[in-house]
Length: 272
Image (cartoon, rainbow, N blue to C red):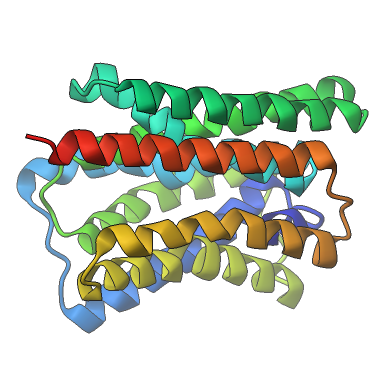
């Protein structure tokens, strides 16, 4: 929702620059609070690559998708990153897919077909299809980012701080060359604060803290499945978008497929 509102006033690069700057400040303050900027020497090349993936490439592609699609279509498509992650884990991590996992992937992509049908029905033409392609491409970037993160043994907060430190000057240079600096108005800053703190920064820290405090990671992990449905309500009431039946059915199928795939993958890890 914040993406869509911000993109009414800013280009994708300008919004990303403001959001990345705020996120970097969030991670800086958190690292100062914990007095932890640790990064293992062998992870230094990795943080540069991670920074080019997230936030740079991932959010450029995602914001471009939101700029071309209604939010209630872009959001469910982006949510399939968990399915893309399961697929990429096969060649990159040597994992295998059970029949239950493959069924879950099939169910999710049936949901994608329903959501795409909604996009096509909205009359977007070529622009809509480009948005669909960008939204699905963003899932590849996000999944690749998390797979690469598994190669690091550094503290997650330090990894985020240094990867965003690598990304910020690159995003700043791209914005200056292609779109120009965003005007530093209060409204622009508010959208940058929302994207950087809520969408990209504080949420990561809260999730990290929740994982530390919980007695059951699996139980709190299920809470993320409420997020896309709550987002649809906000998209409808705040943005005023009409939520089509195709989009609702598609999102239900995507979430059901993700849950089925996650359960199958968890069982394959715990089974002897």
